[in-house]
Length: 198
Image (cartoon, rainbow, N blue to C red; front, side, top):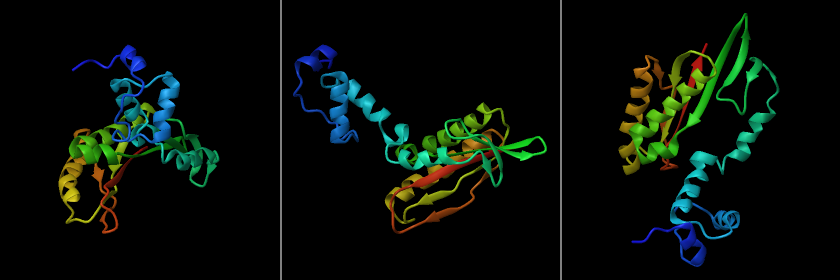
């Protein structure tokens, strides 16, 4: 087996590559070729596929996330001290106090490796709250799963629940499952973590 070097990629522009299997769309693969002015090496292709994935780049949801940038500084809850583009949102609630919130979804990592995907989701939330200079007081985890009798749900549910509790509880943070549900309409696993501080 030979290494797919830059030189090799330059000299073999028509080699078939598994860009679709790696989650890239035809226009994305063409953009990579345009950026590099050649086909990517196998390693480069894998790296682009990860960095341009939904998990890393929010490619299908960024159009919706941009709306958060339109939120006014003055909100019904108080003045926003930090918002979009920061590690976490911070709202001034008066009398020298502020509340920090962070919301994150770890759907894909939790589907791939339930315990670690869920644990690192909680860990990222706690890290971002701490990065704002706040002290976390609770972790809330609304969980959504497909039908309870579906094989995927049976596979991921125990690990996700354990991962959420294991990481949050090791910090001494109460872990509250604010809402949990199952639906027949989807086989996808969805969950988000919220961490609040005062």
